Image (cartoon, rainbow, N blue to C red; front, top):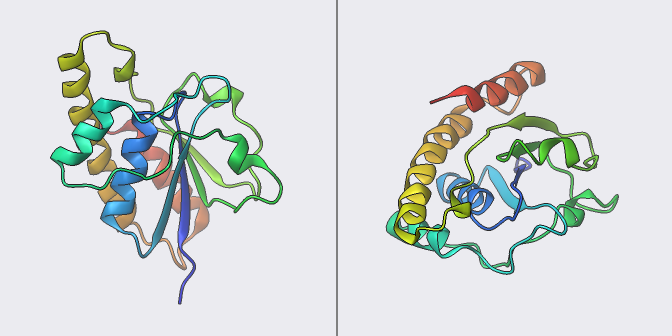
Amino acid sequence: MQKRIAVIFVSRRNSLRSILAEACLAHLDPTRFSAHSCGQPGQLASEIHPAAIGALKSASMPVPDRPPRSWDDFARSNSPVADFVITLDAACQPLEPSWPGQPDAALWAYPDVAAGKDVEETAHGAIQLLFSLRRRLELLVSLPMQGADRAAVRSDVRDLGYMR
């Protein structure tokens, strides 16, 4: 049995963007990938954003069963080692810790749709965000990860951040 590829998605509050990415990757390929999400300490939401729950339910994807968590949970020396860290919030990237095992990193910057005040606009933005993430993640799961040139895979994962 091959080792599952561990991916950590990072956003500021770990309530919408990173939750959608984690749930979508877990839905697309749970046998090859292990998906996780986290946020910036001191900025974490107390619960998953209702717009994220609504978007996942509308796409028939299960909502992660844990509350938002800090990247400190993944940055400890005894933490599981990730293969990729994908940051979904450009403002977080310079603040991130050194990740154990030196995983490959990529920035897939998305706007903070959870910061909106209008409930309908936020819900619509979450659905659009999920569709965009799904397109990128479908391409990610199609990449030849096992036995491939690590530099080429790293480059491909980073390039996915430039998709429109």
